[in-house]
Length: 107
Image (cartoon, rainbow, N blue to C red; front, side, top):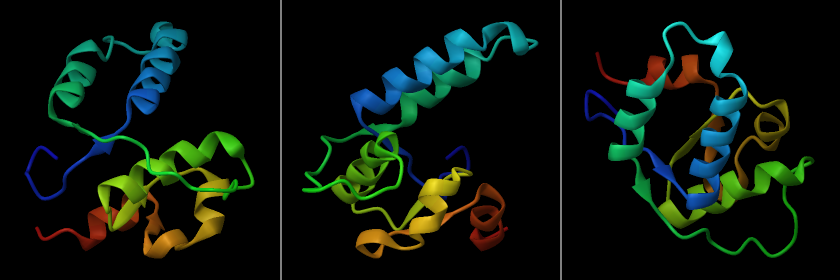
C-alpha cells in the first residue's frame, strides 16, 4: 500500500475487529502500533460486504473477509489463516500468504 502497488480494502466490521484485536494485544507491542494503524485506516478503502449466501469457510469468522474481497472485486486475499488458505480460490479470488504477495509485486 505504501508503494501504491496494491490497494487495501476493508469493511467496517473488519476495521472494528482489527481495533479490538490490537487493543487486546497492546501490551505486546513496543512501541504501540498506533501510528501504523492510523496510517492504514486513512488509506484503506471501505466497501459494503457482498452477500455470500451460505457460509463459505470452515470458520464462519472468516466469511466477512470473503464478503469484503468479493465486494472489492479483489484479486487476492492476503492471510496466514489456515481456514482461509484452505479455500485456495473462492469466487476466483486467490488467497495468498504475505510472502507470496511480496514475491508477486514488482520490485
